[in-house]
Image (cartoon, rainbow, N blue to C red; front, side, top):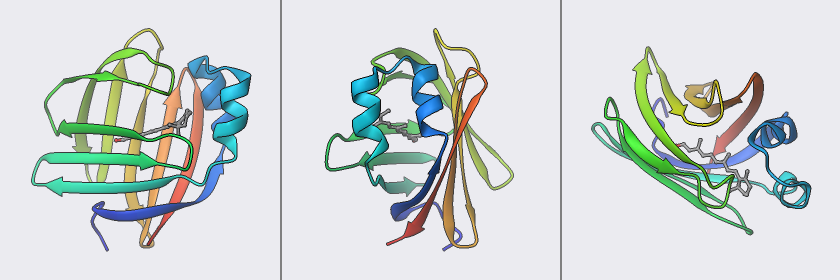
Length: 133
Ligand code: RET
């Protein structure tokens, strides 16, 4: 599907550990997180998105409207309060997360029927790919 909506399962995860280190996540949590096969459920209604990241260990849900800044609390990740803003750039859905950490955000896009996700923090880039399930 050319749409981000649907159910997705992670098939690759590059540099997740360095991304988590950049977030200041503890070694014990990083060890658990590194072993997870993450799933995403993305629900879209026009400009409104609900993105659920789920695993056997912990889940994280974020709800936003494209073009509308929102308060994000990264509960269960690094537990920070952010001002987040999502926009479209071509077929890429891009989020800037403003807060204590510089250069923080993510980009979602579809390529070859797969969901691609880049996670950024302070110069680190984690690249994840998900297949449609
Ligand atoms: C888990 C487990 C605990 C430790 C970490 C996690 C990372 C979650 C991430 C979620 C990203 C969500 C995005 C949503 C977009 O709308 C799996 C909760 C670090 C990185 C980009």
